[in-house]
Image (cartoon, rainbow, N blue to C red; front, side, top):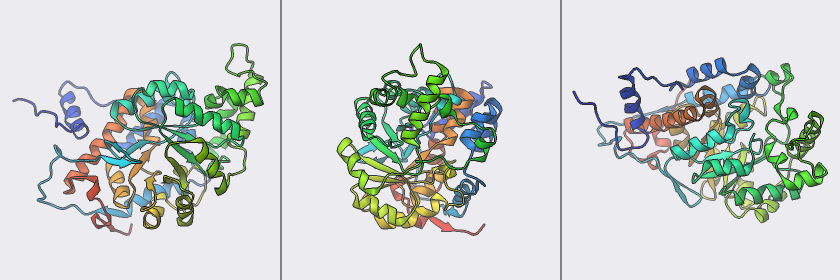
Length: 407
């Protein structure tokens, strides 16, 4: 008996590919089950690295609420609609550009604690190969230029932890633009680290060890103005030099004082492309972002890592979409684990979704291939779930495909 051919869709065909490899006793290294994947990552990671990624603010209630919020919405499938996985279309348009899917790799810092050999470069390469935009964090373990090069011809966005020095900000954004980053994602909620017991109990923060500071340590303006022109990445740098440089960099990007709405004018002068504000949870803040001329927002609570007891991101989404979706692009982050999660966020009005922790678990378990597996799995799950729900395109998703249910 001949094997069925893989569907001509780039994503749903991943299911058939896995089953065909199973005939040769080849099984996925990175599990297609989100919980099993995290469990495997926990086995292979140092405990401080695992808890740094999975850790949440204080009681962890915000992170838990993010996940529960998806369970409170249920999809209502339709039948006999003439749909097919061979023709399903999950492409989206964001900021005037067509993307093959609504999935975006979220900005996650210090990826060297997950995969020391390749860190963000592995994730950037994997995102390129799968066709998913890669968002680089200011807290990366590699320089802007190195990550941009490894992403090749892929779509790449740059996430900014906004320095207190405008000259340093200008330098970072100039470097990002020259390295081919197209969209600026400004994180608003992390001008100070949240209270994270898992990290506190192990007295662990990677930045004081010089980990996750590569963007600053490779920046000529930061080095000139704060380090007397001596890079802590140099061969003669001593541990004390690295510590002092780390403290100076943390003062820049996480010094405990937030920016103001009026400061957005600075970014508009410095960045030619789309500007997206990440961390919006209140309708009024979304309205103010639109009034400030921002191109988009990410409805996000930083995966529950910053404010304990905060509203679930998904619960913020519908009223924000109602208020501003005609004026800017609304993206979603915090809690995405499955294709159905993506489907629900899109049905509630998001135009694209970011995924973070699952990508890191894939990186931990199988490096670059693990990231590819997670991204391909999410996209296959989305295409299959969308088609089995009786839909042909993500543009058909709306509140009418959902019902609210009590848990």
